[in-house]
Image (cartoon, rainbow, N blue to C red; front, side, top):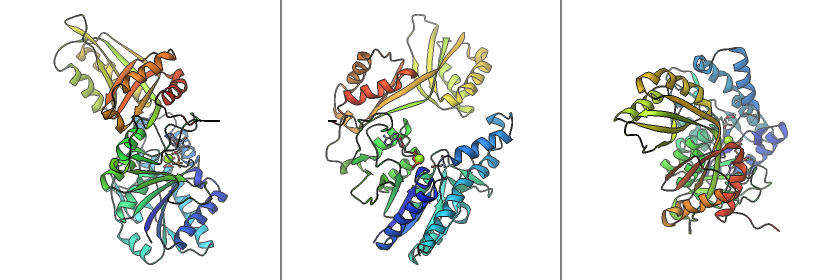
Length: 417
Ligand code: ADP
Ligand code: ASP
Ligand code: MG
């Protein structure tokens, strides 16, 4: 017997039939003698629909001026519906179950509406009900702020709700049921030769998630890693998923042999900015990135070159494509104070990354990457590295070609007949 959190994503609860299937999986897990808390996403497409509704009512208001507390109260409602529906489907199968909204538990969050962080999940009440044999159904993606307002956790946030609940109720494991049967070497929707990984280290999964693999929200992996919560990704479409299916996200030392590269990711949500003829003096980088930080704009890759001129240099960096208009605004306002001559930018870029704890002990990982891209005639615009990943920025139109080339170059392809 174990205490488990089972999380089901949007596609897994996307129709009444899917909800019945989920109810059967939950019932089977309960009948096997486990205590079960379930976290659900909104039915597939529902969050997008609610966001569109919000935008159409708020008219021409820019995102900066939107009342994000109201936005959260609207977009969190999708999960309220799916959790209630699943509770009813379970009751119809003779399973005692009830739904718990974020504020009823409570799931306490920061007040950064639209992308709040979970601060604490008070698991005592749910734990007592689980111990008494009741199933708890919790809507993902939502929590409550100190001001008693509903807050949402950013897109894909139900994964984080699931891990935080698992920590809050001291579960033995958190199982993330989705529309693929595990974590793959790369996005299986794009590369049909991608392979399911039986195990992946927390550190690798954290990099993969933050570099574009949206199978798990980054924060959920971070929480699981910090709290050493075993995390499993598996398919809700399997007829009988069990502990031998899916991918286990675990400590590095539980994996016998680490590959040089475990996974390849891509992100199209990137934009490149170049500042030309930036004065080459102490404090200028602090000035540029300070003004962007003040506007809450994250900067990712940064390149500053030694230039021929003793007094000027060029600066290249990337921001999320969704932030570029705000970034250009901030930089234009600061142009005189910083003293650069011109801004150029490109929104049609993509970041490709190769990730693996094994690259710590392998020489030539970067060389393999650059050679594979060059063989396809793909130009590299910016490079950045850390201990277990290498990322490059390329023209967006080459994303899929580059992804496949890298997947092959590191020997990750499945052998297909
Ligand atoms: P859910 O609605 O269950 O949360 P998501 O759509 O958020 O599901 O995440 C699952 C999707 O993530 C898959 O359908 C797949 O296309 C995508 N994905 C991207 N990279 C990977 C990867 N490396 N392994 C598995 N899935 C991936
Ligand atoms: N429903 C939310 C979204 O679509 C949260 C989630 O599914 O994880 O982003
Ligand atoms: Mg998701």
